[in-house]
Each structure stands twice: as structure tokens, then as C-alpha cells.
Image 1 (cartoon, protein in one colour):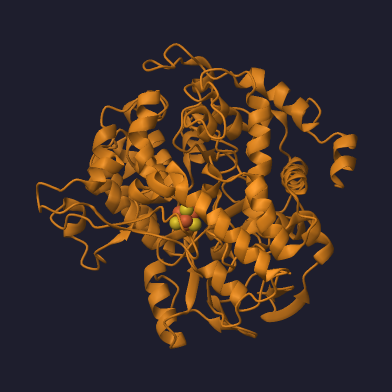
Image 2 (image 1 turned 135 degrees about the vertical axis):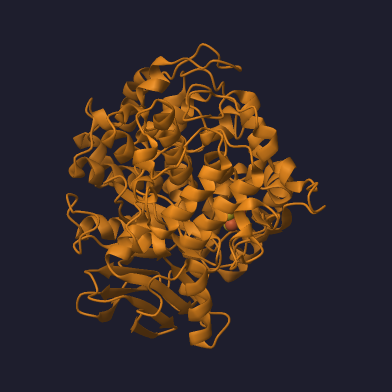
Length: 616
Ligand code: SF4
């Protein structure tokens, strides 16, 4: 079967590495990656744990399809209790690192405790070793990758690491691999930093040879790749334009949050769109976009590699400029752009490059800058607070300056690095943090896309679009078109998306396949690799079980009905323009319907029969 069948447990306090057999009874119930690692996590960690204490654990996990020839089968997840949110955190990443870990023969690595000094973990197949990382501490992600590849004397070594922001306790610090791919949200990088864990360097030469029915697996994965190739989104839209193609679409829909969600349409959207990325610049005659890029085994290739205009003010003073960087992706372009009313594409690319280089989440960063700009405009924040920075909406200079300060952990960047909830609370306006469970919203306004409001409010890791992307249905009509402006039917829609996404996230494949695939397409691939019991129905049940497992942990951590809510702005200030003009979010109507669909009580706790049905 496609699991490697073993995990590595690393005690950072004692400096020990031990091998354990994978709990196959749990793998049957939780599949792998997000689901299985969460099962280990909730069994081993007290829900009340301080996320930045040695008692918190940090798990890197692959899925059964990671490293196989299933399309997009290169994913891994990082699971912990998130310091930004205080909730369960699971952040996924693509690139090549996950497949390399699997090919070294490991399903999962569990880190516990705290190292007395900076360390990194070296894995070459079965040979594992904790090594001194003093020389890497203070280095960026990109420097760390380069140094560890050189040290290993093997250019195929893959590195998953934190940058300076993770070391400095930025609460939305990421874990980054392959330069541009990140386990991006909830501050998983800050947990690594708190443990003095800089990186994992891995080289695997074993392959993934234990597929249950190799012939059937080859046949079915080839069929499913064809579906991706033939679909207009996964076969044309994403490879050609990347996710940023959504910028103009969502703006026209009237759901592009602008200036800290004061507006729902951005007058500068076309200047920061995918189309603008492909245009030639008047300054140097070159387009921003260099090429697209695929993660391991991916037949979609949504990734972007772009190059800045070297005469732009942002790069002029950066001698170590690398020349090209990942992005822009839609969410980052929105957060760094529309959220602060900024339409300077080069500045967005520069800030995004720093997010990649030093490992912090551009969504939370950009949204926090937007909140700070509103506080500044209100006169609540002044130049005395900001160290002389004039944080006006629309200022590309301020965006770039703050990105530099956050990366280095200096000046007002330290306050930005704590996220918008803590910033707005400190200055007396918690209601201006556009977040749920202290995690900032991504790029869709809940007044213009009602289902996304419910998605955000109920997301187990705080506001997130990747837990239930109802934009697919409400805007793109996938798998069926629903009206984005109404609340009717959204409870069931969100539940269905959440459960299916949990199954995809636990399989080792990328959620972007779900533009073309359903669980009916995933099931035969998992079945051929792992066992006939993985039918479509069973995968749906596994997804639901995982969702409830995460929820139950959060409930024990202290979350309840009061935390499944949106900021007052979205419930009381109607959209001013666009198709949603005059509308507010109908979240208060949707929550009871959603709880009923989930089998939870009025306070959002699992009822006994729900627990029994799911075996929790
Ligand atoms: S669709 Fe994009 S993010 Fe997903 S695996 Fe492919 S390249 Fe990576």
C-alpha cells in the first residue's frame, strides 16, 4: 500500500530521533497528511497548550499519493496548534519536498520539545541526524536552501525551512520549500522558530514502490490526468494565467475587498491583474511573467515565476536581488494590493518576493498593513507609533518598507508581525481586524460571495479560502452554479466543500484538482494505491471525520459559537457598489443551518450521535 509505513519522531530537547511504525488502523480512518497527522496531534497534545511552548508539537506529513504518479501528488502538510489563532493549524505546500520525504521512506516527522540551540534535521533515506544550525540562524529561506544543498553535496537535496521571520516570532511566519512554495498560514513557521528548528534537508532514493495495484493505478491516474488536461480551468486557465486570473473576475463580481474591506471593488484591479503581469513594461520592454512552473508530478502548472523591473525604487537598494521569484498568485496580489489600495505591480512583486525569501504569509501581512492604514487614516496610529512612517492607503513605498521591517523584525514591523487582531486590539479597535479566529481573510468579500462568509466563519484554522472554496460554485459554476448573493443552500454547500477538501488534503494531491475532479475521481486513484475500501462514499466520510476531529480539538481549546462569526463591518456596512450593492453578510442566518447540517448543538459542540456516527 502507498504509505511508507513509518514515521520519524524527533525529540528536540533530548536530541534523539526514533522510528515508529505508522498506525495503519488510523490511516484507514484518516487517510494521511492533514487527517492522519491531525489524529496523531490531537492524541498527543493538550488542546490548551501554548503554541510557542516546548509542549506544542509540529508535524510534517505526506499523503498516500505523495510521491506517486498521480497528478499533483507532491503535497505535504504541516500540522500544529497555530500561534496566530490558538486553533488547530494545517498548512499545505507543494513543490518537491514532500515527494522527496516520501521517497526517502517516511510518511511523517513529529517534532517535540525544544532544542537548546539552533538545529536542522538531515535525512538521506534511512540515515537521519540532527545537526547544528548556528551558521544558518539569521539567514533567509533562500540562503538556507543554497547553503544546505551545498553542504549535502547533492543538488537534488530538498529543503523545507524558516526564514528570519520564523526566528523572530512573526505570528504569520511560514515554512517554505523549493524557494517559492509555502505551508503558508496560521504561523507554523513561528512554531518551528520557537523550537530552534531551522530546516529539514531531505534526499530520498527509494521511490514509492508499494502501490497496491500498480497496473490499475497507472491506468486510472492516466485517465484522471486527461480530465485535468481537458478542463477549461485546469487545462487552460490556471496554466496560462495562474490564479491571478481571478483579479478582474472577482472585482467585477463586486467581491474584491478593498482598503480593509471598506469597499468591494478596486479601481486599480486591472493594473495588478494576470493580464497586467503578461504585458510588456514601458520602462524596460519586458513582461513581468517569465514562465509558469509546476510542482512535483503536476499536470496543471499554475505557478508563476516573474521578474521585477530592476529600475523600480524597491529593488534599487537590494544588491542581493535574485532576479526572479515565485508569484504573483491571486491571494498575494490581492492582499499586497487591493487590501491597502495599492496598484503598483512592481511593489507588490517586491513585497511578495520578501515574503518568499524570508518566509511569511503575504495574506496576513498585506491584510494587516491594510488595517494599519485604516488606523493611520483615522488618526489612531500616528507617525510616533510607526517610527515616522506615513501609512496612507495606496502607498507602495510604505508596503515595501513594512515588508523589509517585518522580514528583519525591526521597528513597526514587529507590531505588523503580530497580525491585525493584536494590532487593532492594542490600539482600541479590534473590530477593524478583518479576521476570524485572529486569522486574516483572503481575497473574497463575504457580502458579494455569501458562501465564503460561512466558509471563513467556520474554518477550523481561522479565515481561509482553502478549506471550502465555494467561489468555484458561486462564481465559476463548478460543479454546479449557485447564486453568490443568497444564503439559501450555503450551509450544505460549505459542508460538502469542507468535507471533500479535507479528503483531498489528506490524500497527497492538490486542492486545485477539484476544479475538474470530484471525490469520484480521487477515489479510484486512492483505491488502486491503498485499498478497495476507499470508495467515494468512504472518502466523503473520512473528510467529515477529519473536519469534526479538528473542530473537537478547537472546542477543547476554548472555541465555540462566539468564534464562528465575522467582523461587524461585514454584517452592518452594506456593499457600496457592484452586484452586491446594499447587501451585508447573512452569516447569522447561515450558522444555525450549518450547525444542523453538521450535527452540532447550538454552541457548535459535537452532539453524541455525531460523535458516534463518525467514531470520534
Ligand atoms: S496546481 Fe499549482 S499549486 Fe497545485 S500542485 Fe500544481 S503547480 Fe502546485
